[in-house]
Figure 1: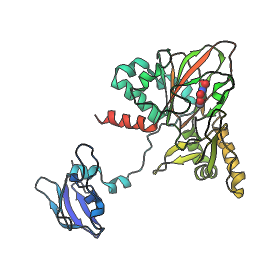
Figure 2 (figure 1 turned 45 degrees about the horizontal axis):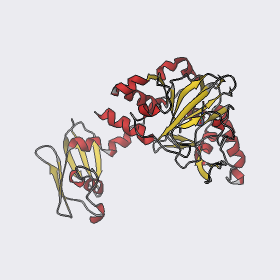
Figure 3 (figure 1 turned 90 degrees about the vertical axis):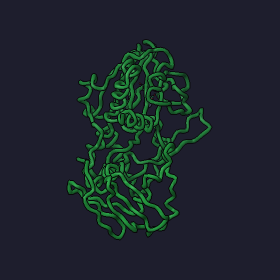
Length: 375
Ligand code: OGA
Ligand code: ZN
């Protein structure tokens, strides 16, 4: 562990020189706000109120205490703070901002189809072991896709394994939603038609982060599944067709849902690709079926439509897409704001086909994975 070897007071920050020569700048407001006494020990919420000190707060006295802590007596508020050097080093934003960002995502293309076993996980392994649960969560978070094998095929039985992660996300399609062909369908999923690669519910402000399609019966002819890693497609565009990538990142498209069973009109603007603060891929928003009449500026419409067209073609390109067939007891689990999924047409007279679908927020996957990995 590094220790503090030197301190230097500047106008807005304290410079810490570490025993390994690394240097950190700690802003005074930041330090005061993060005093270890600032938080309630149970809720871990901040009880200290930064608004009660002025913007000019600074160290009246500072030194390294005999047990190696950074000790600061503040210019106001009659308060002394003691910072553990380990905490300071781990939370040092000078060092963090110097590091090159490394994406956690493992992008994939059609070659994954030959290695489907790498994304499969046994249902009972998840139910019976934390290691199994972690493996599933890691596949979901890093690769964006997992197929749970040998789950029971009773109706609603998917909930038990999903609840190993957390609660599901409710929508007006109900939980689970039934993917089965019905008369007068209010969604094209409830037909026997092919579904082009799509994400579900892009017309929500915050579409579900994850989707789970639990196959109960699949004896009809056709109805094979497809999936594409749209982050990988976005990455291809970023590296090879930057003009198109920039349009997709910068121009809001419009999506809507207005089916006949709803007493709501759902409409949202969102870009096809959105990025994180580090420039990594955050969300994809793409669906041919529910794109609304676009309303971007007339000078942009042609290039926006062409970018949408190009993106869509790549999202169906055999170079990127994998094809597979769900078997009863499979739970096709995926990041709904990263992958697009689809199916071929099926013949409802040749047999039966029934999937049950569930949604879950992305926070549940990431929060649970972080929690399990910290132990
Ligand atoms: C859906 C869907 C896929 C399938 O219900 O949104 O994409 O294989 N279903 O039926
Ligand atoms: Zn779908």
